[in-house]
Amino acid sequence: DTGVSQNPRHKITKRGQNVTFRCDPISEHNRLYWYRQTLGQGPEFLTYFQNEAQLEKSRLLSDRFSAERPKGSFSTLEIQRTEQGDSAMYLCASSLTGLEAFFGQGTRLTVV
Amino acid sequence: RKEVEQDPGPFNVPEGATVAFNCTYSNSASQSFFWYRQDCRKEPKLLMSVYSSGNEDGRFTAQLNRASQYISLLIRDSKLSDSATYLCVVNPPGGDMRFGAGTRLTVKP
Image (tube, rainbow over all chains, first blue to last red; front, side, top):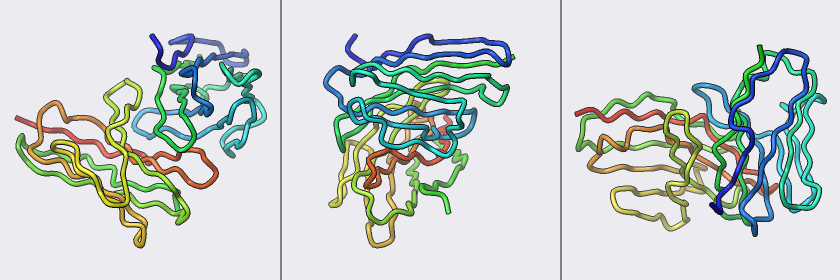
């Protein structure tokens, strides 16, 4: 499968715990995006990378959130001290510059 | 003003109907535009790119109006399988892709 891959698909965690999600983009894609989506809403932009450089972070991304793309390939999104409001679908997408993005199936986070 | 705005619907139409969605964007320097389709509990998937001259793909037609900063999607001869949420996507100069909240379409027999 050469599409965008996200792991895990589902994560249930207790409030206050840290979680980390992984995204493997399509191999030749230089851009990688993270979005958060809650029920009934469109995807909300969190951050994106051009190769290994993180070019923009949304105001939605509090200091509990951090993302990395160390070698310009896979990326991780970490949420520290999770809160119930963090429960959502976290979507990763990749693209070539200026072209359409392709999404992974997402990681559904539930904070209990 | 939101960066990308869409009429949330829902649009409930009978099979065979023609339905149109509009989307407005705030950044006049935006460079590329797309329509995505999202089925319930699935990831968004590209439906079509939107070109300045307008473009058509079967029953789907997309148009861009830069002067008024909106894009549209027209679906002709609606099928039951067209039921989904349609997301407008705008790519501003910064390169990140901004999504509208989506327009929900239900096509009924």
